Image (cartoon, rainbow, N blue to C red; front, side, top):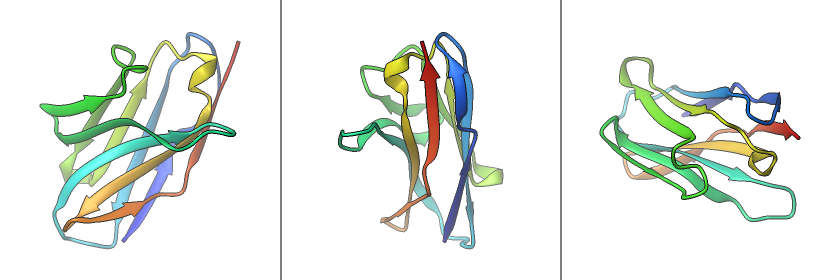
Length: 114
């Protein structure tokens, strides 16, 4: 199983970015997907998780600004990030749970300038 994440970059405060993460190499069912982030000097934290497009959960700090959604046909999870703040600056990681085993993608850096 390989996870390919993309979409990070540099954006000004108030701007938007969309992250994506695609699963390659396995046809097994995906139980859940999620995005996590790790800021410099801090522990990795949950940003959002999705079981289905009607079953999602968000960290309080991103509620109302971020949206997680999935495209099962493309084995892809997305994170739409709006109204970005400097405190959203971090390396963002995707995680897939496949047959109850967790797989992590390589991080993608999001930098929000003030």
